[in-house]
Amino acid sequence: MFFLKLSLLTLLAVASDLLVHAENVITCDGSVQHLSCDTGLINVMSAIYGRTDKRICTTGRPFSEIQNTACVLKIPIISARCNGLRQCEFKTDTLGSPDPCNGTDKYYNTTYNCIKGHVSVTCEDGYSTLDCGNDVIQIINANYGRTDSTTCSHGLPDTILADTNCYASGTLSIVATKCNGKSSCTVQASNTTFKDPCFGTSKYLTVSHHCLPHPVQTSVTCEGDNAVLTCGAGVLNIHNANYGRTDSTACSTGRPSSQTSKTDCYATNTLTEVTNRCEGKSSCVVPATNSVFSDPCYGTYKYLSIKYSCVVHNHL
Ligand SMILES: *[C@@H]1O[C@H](CO)[C@@H](O)[C@H](O)[C@H]1NC(C)=O
Ligand SMILES: *[C@@H]1O[C@H](CO)[C@@H](O)[C@H](O)[C@H]1NC(C)=O
Ligand SMILES: *[C@@H]1O[C@H](CO)[C@@H](O)[C@H](O)[C@H]1NC(C)=O
Image 1 (cartoon, rainbow, N blue to C red):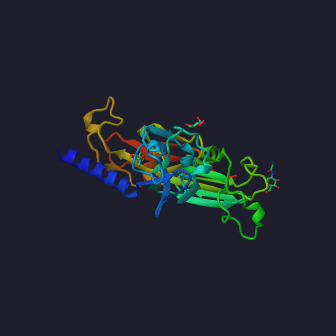
Image 2 (image 1 turned 60 degrees about the horizontal axis):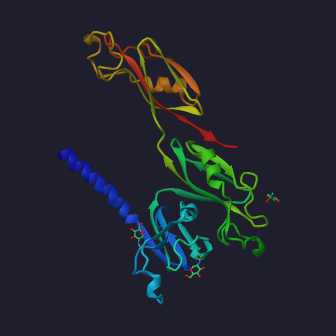
């Protein structure tokens, strides 16, 4: 019962955290839609063009045009353009949406929340470096092009700033491939990295990302064996290690309980020894023996437990 209550409270806390940031914007057909986040970055949850309500966007419209409330077309271009930005604005009739219900007056209905993340802007030919320290990068969105006339405009003639509807369609997948799962990465904002989406216009690269905790792996090696740590890509980052025994089941097969029942056995030099042999390397071998760590609990059959992750950097 107590547990049930606790998880219910946790759920409510999570849900209300989302609700605080949830926004719904209704924009009548042809008007400008504006999405923005005071803190965090836009994350579109649903974007619909059509009509599901008789009471919205009715001014000056004949009854016949607002009757149909079963008209729904999903508009994925809104999340493609706005996700990962602090604010996003577009004239709805420039989206080129097909007409889902001829004869019915429609509106744009967008629901979004604001998520944690960083957004960076790099002017054409510059380099964008993302760094999550020992965590890993998750790209939220990216665009190489131009969507306003002020960003990266200093000293440039108006003629190469005028096209503000410029999107390089492959940007997100190129940046995600280069950066996702890495601890840091560098991408050049250039038409060699991305196909030039608007020749003659000065462009910039906008990238938003957040940092996720590294997937941590655990290696357990019974006394007398060698711990072999390997990273397919990247280098070892050692989080924690102990030579000794902290539970009675690991490495217990065929052992009398007298050798496995002591579960508070720690060799205090373990992290130092393992770090010296492994940190920053692509692989390492550590013998799980008293000769490496000395014996923290004579008479107990021990094991070496190591928590580590593989850190990948992707620079040029
Ligand atoms: C807007 O969309 C949301 C989510 O689909 C829906 O719950 C809401 O009723 C819609 N509002 C209007 C006015 O159509
Ligand atoms: C939409 O409806 C109007 C009148 O009902 C008709 O004249 C027009 O051709 C229709 N357009 C399309 C694209 O079906
Ligand atoms: C790529 O960018 C460079 C420098 O901005 C420019 O000189 C060149 O014409 C561009 N090439 C293409 C194919 O757009």
